[in-house]
Length: 183
Image (cartoon, rainbow, N blue to C red; front, side, top):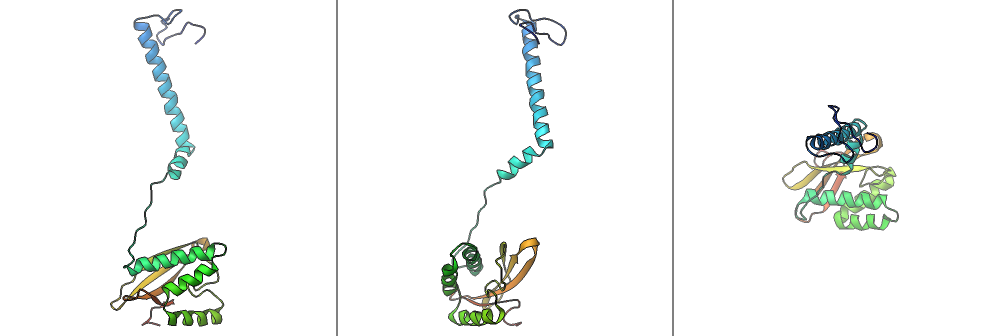
């Protein structure tokens, strides 16, 4: 298009002011189609280059986490989440100790301290490092709650711990690689 004269695909001219009637309708329709084509091409290009995927991934759907203080699996998950946060955060050592006092039976706190002295590792995590993620799964028992805690480390390696909690006091009385009865 040059100057005030515009050319329509069937070679009709709209004149100096964009003339009226059939030519104007065709002119606006052609302009609309061109704009729509440009938009479609731009969208296709964005998707081909991965720009649409990036935008979608960063706008992910809301997540939710729920639990109940009366549910032992929730309590074990809460303990491991808070404990790993405290172990990761600067100056969280005091919180780690407080979490142990709150979630572990006094007898197991002593047993864990002895295990740590012997193994030179963190007894709650059964490792010297802090995992990147964790998952708690109910393993089911009758007289107490047994859970499998899967810890995920760098390189996507995992370890599994068996964690046992009393049903009445909601305190952890065992953490290990095997369950209480098996070990």
